[in-house]
Image (cartoon, rainbow, N blue to C red; front, top):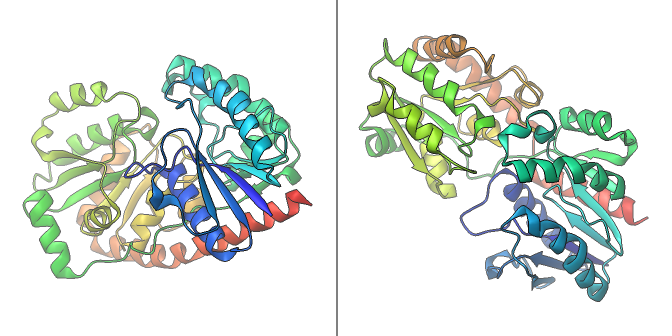
Length: 373
């Protein structure tokens, strides 16, 4: 069997949610099925670290898709030509963009449809592209994979596809995310916050992540809890000027730190040493940071919208992401109520066990076999 995969988003030190899904699923499928020949197709020079086994062949296919105008050229012209040479049994595209000219069966992974509801969160050309072509990708795909029941129902409703065509394969959390020792927590806090307790945010710095309201809520909270800090981990997705302008106007600006994108080990350390995670996006198809907080035994303040309640269950303090004062009150509760924190941590430890990359990889393999027929 031959499996070709769009691996554009496997980039060294630049893995976000979709990239991690791609990385964790493929790494396991390659190891579990040495009899299969995998072809990973990159739009720029691939790193050899992504050759997960001797049964993987890495391909560099231009042009690099650095602008949305190049997407149709890569996916509908260059990619089909390469697939005709490889002759795979199936093509998998984990980043929501399928090929309208694929010469083989294909699985498209659609993580969420945020662009349908909020095109203003994306550059205009990108929003137009997704809203024009995503219904066509859904129709062209032989199977659609998504990461939550929320997104599955959204895809069925918006694109009028059969629910039988859509398969839910959850994200999970890397095994490196564990509770640090008390000494490790003290050491990390001294390094990142001068020993002060802090809230941590993990994710891209993007409007749909609701960073603006998060910082406004922290500014309000900070008036009565001056010892706390706010640590933000992640890189701008499009533009961070709006954040820099906002922070400059806040009374708590000296207590807010942007650490940029961190490696796996550093990320686990900073998350694990936090007093709590504050992750309150407007829209999520899943929300991997939810599980990272649970795995590190850190209390979680999160959003009551979209897929977050499905993923978090009863293990997080959920608030309205539009209500700055409700968010500030949530921070206050986590800062002042140790019993609440202990309860959330206990529930999070139990909840995170429901998610496994091993099981998700097995489920993806089942979808592959079923789709090939």
